[in-house]
Length: 141
Image (cartoon, rainbow, N blue to C red; front, side):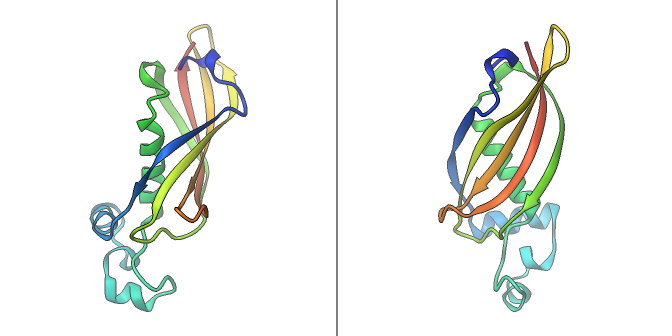
């Protein structure tokens, strides 16, 4: 979508993705190897009573689900930043995640491009919000 096709308040909803224990441990083993993500015994003794996904993993899944909608297509130029990232609830093996994306701001930069700010809100299969974050991108006019 081009810049002028977005409107503030516009909503998009993604498909869902189920995270397995293996997915969680594989991601964390490479990018966030804290015990609550990779060590079943220690995680079982911790405050979450078992393995949970890394917040960075949850954020990555949220972004992946958004990109899979192919709304940006060839009109995206570059990412500008992410703000107000919140890991709201733990994500457990077997949780199925979906993301609701809302256009919360848009600013024309020049005659070729504008900046869009999106709020990504990710929910588990119980409709509990587990993640929220703002994503700003530069898109073609």
